[in-house]
Amino acid sequence: MKLFLDTADTAQIREAVRWGIVDGVTTNPTHVSKTGRPALELYKEICRLVKGPVSLEAVGLTADEIVEEGRRLAAIADNAVVKVPIMREGLVAVQRLTAEGIKTNVTVLFSPLQALLAAKCGATYVSPFVGRLDAVGHMGMDVVRQIKTIYSNYGFTTQILVAAVRHPTHVLEAALAGADVCTMFFDVMKQLFEHPLTDAGIQMFLEDWKKVPKA
Ligand code: E4P
Image 1 (cartoon, protein in one colour):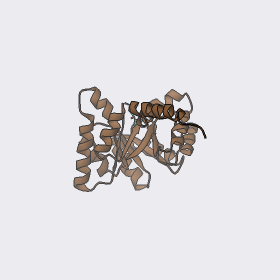
Image 2 (cartoon, rainbow, N blue to C red):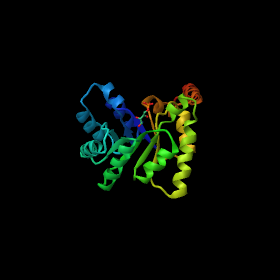
Image 3 (spheres, rainbow, N blue to C red):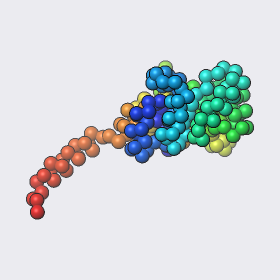
Image 4 (tube, helix red, strand yellow):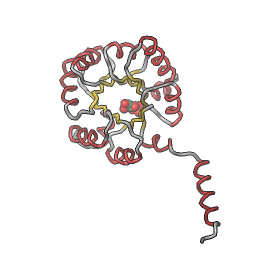
């Protein structure tokens, strides 16, 4: 499973890229607004920092607007992916962008049927928001499993990108469900390395090493 960072914070991206486990980045208008920077220069920098795909969200509401915006976003860098919200106009735009060879990530997605439609329209990725489903009493990961079954039933190549991840267990469940990608905040990615027994184990070895006679 690929691991993406869900942020527009370039300091976080730089640090996580250094760890060598970042396969891509997802941004959204909320992340961008938090940086206080103009979107275009920010997008260019992020696409330079990361080798893998970087999702940049279109905010138009008609297919024409999304296609035009999508072309501009895709022209920023070879690794740019156009994020398009799941809605009728969005999926019309996805078909047109796909026909032009532009990669898309269909986002703000909450149901397996939305994912079926997105795949039929040629989406490169679909992003089910599991944490937001969990927050309203649904089982976010069930949706991921259902999408996985539908895609394997019909041989769709659209990749499942698990999003709105809140904790490492979501990452684990995404991997067990066979998701293609899981995108997460910097703090969640950091937690993947950690275990209290690892800390205690390292500490114990360091203490014991001090008792080894010096030559
Ligand atoms: C994914 O691509 C989205 O950026 C993100 O995961 C949205 O989720 P959240 O705003 O609920 O965290």
